[in-house]
Length: 179
Image (cartoon, rainbow, N blue to C red):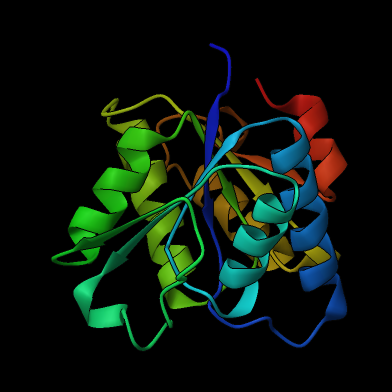
């Protein structure tokens, strides 16, 4: 399947390591240059705002989906191609999954992990079969990968981790493997 749109799940903060913002901007540049449609959480702050701004700067299409509850907290982006304000987080996640061909997980907090695990679960249950990539900027997700391998080792997963999720250390590695 040809990838035409990617969902990005990431933090509404930038985090402490400058590599998070650097990788996010690089990823946004690739998304824009490749004319992929960005589907994201609709915020204007943190890595969320940075990915949207970078894709827009490259002439790309950016679709934000934000729940009413987070409109002020995440400061919804006012300059994107489309903004959908939805009732709640469940609707947001479902719309993001439905509109993307693949998902990329960047550094983030609880919300980012929630979105990652829901997407992984839906993939395992065959609700969708979209590729999931994790941008492991500066080793941010090393501990998560170790934990996922432990789940596999202890017999709690139905398939090997590598069949469900692809960890990459740089944006260029994602685009070399995507598709």
